[in-house]
Length: 303
Image (cartoon, rainbow, N blue to C red; front, side, top):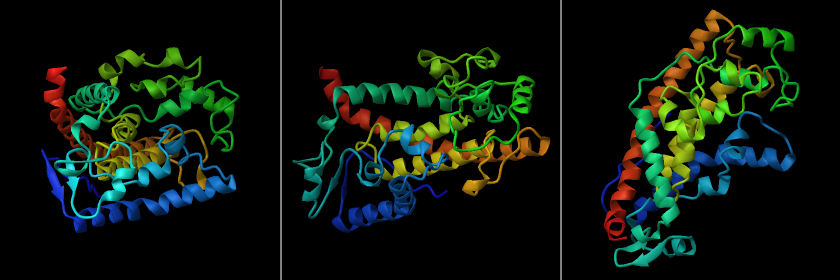
């Protein structure tokens, strides 16, 4: 995956030719994927792998497609169209997102998010979970989350496999969907208020969540970074479901059989590849959030 996020700076001015080119490139990069999703939705055709990216993360395709330069990046030329959007204004620097456009609730969120990202970044990655969270979600459950997909093995075999396999999920938002009987089987017991003590950078869900943390600070975080995080989330989600107990062959994916030694090796290699990409995106996101907070610092000190 090509990383396209722009390096943050204190204050920037973009010539019209540059920001229009960036806007067009951003939209061209996403349109094929988003249009396919919208066409399926219009026809009522589910895609249990990709639908997750819009249902769980609750960020609409139109929002993802809309380009923003980020905070304190001012648009030269004919940029009046941006004044129809929330938070953009025309001030002494020109048209853009001024520091006072960020609501108090978003400032608090930015501070919490960057603390979580930094805590995660400072830990060593762990690659031994083998994607067992999806298996733990269906353990001894008859009503599974993705009822449109068959399971890869009979339920009795699945229960025996999960019962005999170590589960060590560090991600609260995956752990909270475990079946009732699988909860005590997890080596870790993360909670919402302790997630920064558990999340680690090798975790697929922590790396998918880079997309969530980026889009929660839109439009103050530039859209190229949000798109980078989105494509990483797509890759991680596909890996997640390929290694799950669901049979995803009808969607065009080859299963990763983590119940076998060769499957565990493949999964670990793929998980490490996602981790390597996440390091770059997490670093960019941390820097971008600090840039947002730095622009607010005089106001915060004066509150």
